[in-house]
Length: 222
Image (tube, rainbow, N blue to C red; front, side, top):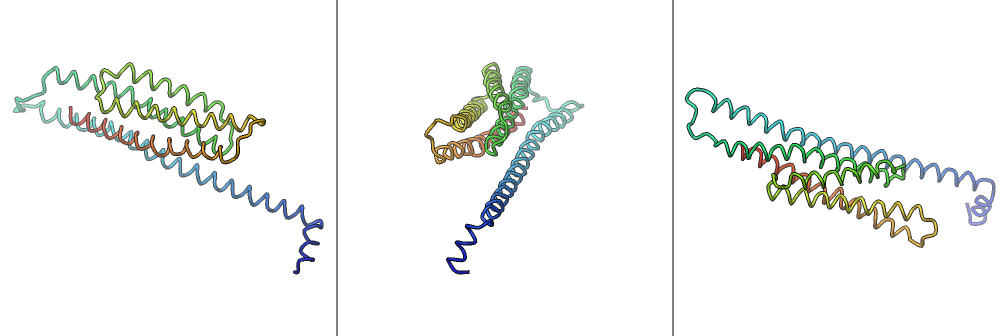
């Protein structure tokens, strides 16, 4: 087909059909990308949830095994002092309260950021993530005296990182809603990349470190 024929074809009634086909292909591509992103995110959440459940199960099994070794006749006279036992239980109780809320924050914020990324309604998730962040910070402040310095530092950095990601996502939403603003698609992409880097990069690394540190503290001090 030469240039003249191509121009005639594009200027004819076929042009709306070609535009419709292109729009359909674009929509299909967006749907496939969204489904793939959700599946990948769900797999990541499942992995972290399994690690969290394994954490305390290992601790409980270790405690039962130690009790069985030291509770019977002929047990070692070098048993932990009552002070050490109280200190261990107090620290573990603090982690029992802190970890579920920190995990809840990570999960809720991830859902909020995912909704923002794919353009879904996110108002309720936005409030849930904000509330989870505030509750996590308040819970950490109340239990800070009973946490180790390492756990305190990791939890503080994790909560601060998630709050930064939440603020960046809110700023991105505000740019989308304000039709009079002069922001470019590049500005919105920068905010999206920032959210992804904070939550999927920094926060995920911190929550993994926090889980490992709590496991180490619980087993070593028991």
